[in-house]
Length: 196
Image (tube, rainbow, N blue to C red):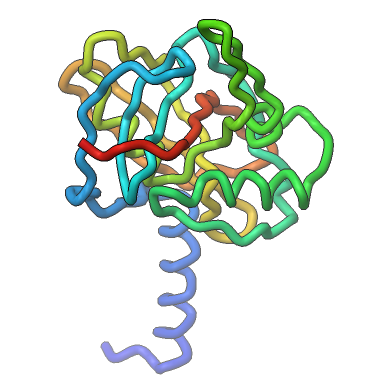
């Protein structure tokens, strides 16, 4: 039986909407990034180096659980690549303002370590968060089970959230509704460094 073009269009739109909001999202590998895990100056771990910048994940003691991403009716306009998390976070905070949401918690974070103060934290982009996932079996690398928010938007009304497994378990990246779903938050920071 041949379906009319109108039916095919409706089916195609339905599939796009359903698949993009509830199914697994796959991100491309970041093979061009050399990421030996070393201690960072703020007490966390360096999880990536790219274009003369180091990306440091906050220590395991700095993590929030059961946090909302933010307003699901507001489209911010964010990116997913490594190096975009800081700009994403600033856009989110500038748009949403005060509150107790993932990007704002990271943005307001101040860490003192070895006599130095670090106040340049942000909510990682999807690819920055993925880079953290690659290090999950590294000694000293700790994550809770469950989802972690990224600063990367998917379709209107959703945000990418990733779940981390332990050991050899897989992880999946999901598009998760911003305001009523809760997830974990682990901030990162970036700073100039020599690439190794």
